[in-house]
Each structure stands twice: as C-alpha cells, then as structure tokens.
Image (cartoon, rainbow, N blue to C red; front, side, top):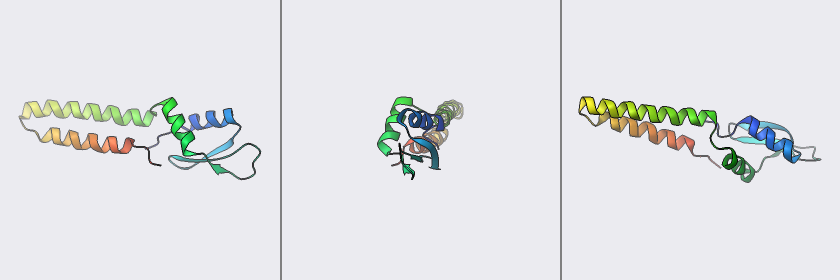
Length: 105
C-alpha cells in the first residue's frame, strides 16, 4: 500500500529546491538536493511530516472504506445467522487492514 502520493512528494521537492523525485519502492523516494549532482534519499522525517500534513492517500481511504463496509455487512450477517463467525471474519479483515496502514521506517 502506498502511503505517499507522488504529487505530495513533488510539491515538497518544488518548495525546497529538490529536483527529480524518484520512487525507489512504494514508500521510499530519492531526489537531487539543491546544488547536488547525486540523488539522496528524502529523509524519513520529511516523509513523516508530509504524511502528517496531508493525511490519508486515496488507496488508504479505499482500504478503510472497504473494511468498514465489510464489517457492517458481517455484523448484519451475524445477526441474521445468529452466529459470531462473520464477526470473526470482519475482525480479521480489519486487523489486516490496520496492519497495512502502518507506515514502515
């Protein structure tokens, strides 16, 4: 899951003099600092600051919405079936979703 939008990274780079941001992995970027000839990784502190300022990406919102809808559907099924198994499935899906939302350093 991508935790940063490329537009957010490009906006920060434009505002701070960095050029040509390149995603190395889904959540790790390299760019050229001001007056540099070799790219460097964008510091994690900066990425955390961007994330705190901008909030959730569209991908994260999609996963959260699907977890809420799935949980609601499982709750309804649990009531009609009079069985807790759908609630267990909802808990498992929500736990996996929350684990995927964690930003790794």
